[in-house]
Length: 294
Image 1: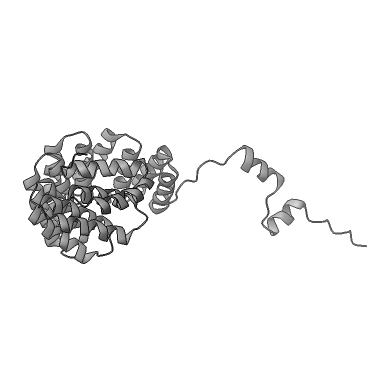
Image 2 (image 1 turned 90 degrees about the horizontal axis):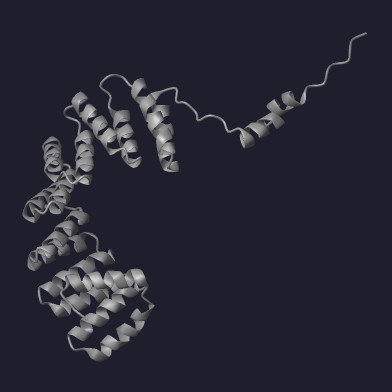
């Protein structure tokens, strides 16, 4: 006579239907598992990026360090990610060393030049930062991003004319990039070269006609060029594109008052009462830029 078959255990049933056992519940709730470890460089990089997204920079650094050891000699991809994670973790000196090592391994690589430049710029070492960006431009002269990075750094370093030349390089590399025309127009406005600024901003608007911010910047240049009618019209166009921005009503009200159109100014000023503190701060900066004192 055969013996009665033994019933499957709860653990066996749980495994069949892929449900957690009580021990697993405890482990998940009270004793979190250790972070996963990547078996390949790609897995380690993916885990590192996930940690960056979660704001866990120290864990990200560890994953990228592991990825560096898993890559073939001469492959600097994980090293660039490691340097970036160190920047996020406010470990700028360590990040700089990683970028420098990556550049020593791949002399023609673009990313280490940009990374080194960013770190140096953060610490006010503009001359060295600019030198690395100039090298980046030599490596990829058709890349508009490196031209505009050079332009931004030159502008911050107090060299607007050189910044303008670099920005024009970005436009030459990507003539249909509205941002590069806008950036050039904004620089020219700060240099009080208003007619040239308007040419650049017009190009930006033609490429991106639905961007209300571009009309706002054009209004500043129009006002500087003493073209007050066009300045007011430009702000109105910005407001038409985004009626919810009460800032535009505030600015139109001031410009109308400045040009003696008091009744219309009052109407706009009433609407501008809905401005919040951010709007008011922005309006104050715009008026200061336009040379208007209230």
